[in-house]
Image 1 (cartoon, rainbow, N blue to C red):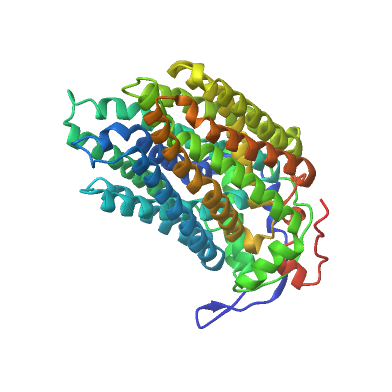
Image 2 (image 1 turned 120 degrees about the vertical axis):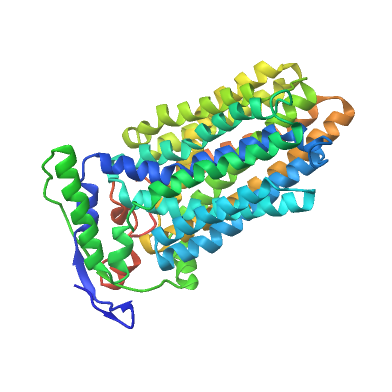
Length: 494
């Protein structure tokens, strides 16, 4: 057992079977609690993004904030900037201070931002609060993704991670449908309706916070940071709960890990690990994140604006809800194949196919109606949804445990900065210039750029992808603490 001096655990070299014990667990009611407590954050993100997309006309009008189409794109970019910074800051803190402290803190930051957004009185204040909300959501991506993958058994990890990331679209669908009555001036005054839309996120966030209090710290994080007694206690309680609630006998764990405990990992060590030890995986993650970030942030942030500006749509809620449901169903339907067929085939296939379909939509955009554009989007993103979620899964799986949260944050921030900030800005400008010319075909160039990036990401995955399906995290990437203890470091030759 570890001891503490001055409130800090004494570090030793230990042998542990905690990873094997977690990976051999059957699916149980305890795992559903993890999914609900942690995974629902993506519903919040979907709610936020959809609300902003659906509020285009309300925010432009006299009862709104007087925004232009370019301002709507700028608001999306500001939100993403906050998410990038939040991911980097909170990602580093997650690896240093633990998953649980940070996934509570980041949810509180999100709640603060979304509540204060409802009180916006001018564009500058609105942009500032979108930035704060983004800070919380970006931090959630780093803290929550790392915690989920460290608590879910290896044989379920792919499908669960992709389904959880896909739950973003449940929030998107819910947000789209809720804006229909909230933006109806016959039911709610126009100046109040759009403000209530932002308050909805806070209600759901408080419910998530209540469940999340019961989610434990990652046992993997604990034993590496000198707290193996706490790690043993948590895993023992999980095993007892699984036996009692689900009535199963657990198989003996297979394999153990020898590690040299450490308190922190320096940024220099993280950089050396990512760029020197795993350069091919670094290229892979960058390609996946940039492609999916541009595709989604460019298309979805401005989908409602496109429908209203060019295709005569008033309320966009139904259209976006259908689009969102298709995304969620795609993640559910295709997610299990990432564990069965394999990561490389599924990642490359979903990226390339969705990219080709988006290019076809760009070629046909001039002849599409509001409904046919929506159906095109549903087909494209049924495939793309699982692929986009696999970017987060890949970054979480293929690097050592001590760097996991920061790696997720880094690739999310870089990919999103390239695709998620430039995408809304580019599409906002394209919509504005195309509307002045009276030609919807002017936005097709954005579709082509997104298609090229997605196809490129798929090709990279085909050559550099890692076969991580049903493998222990410690087998995919040897922990730095295990390398310190004398275990051989895994070469980047997958």
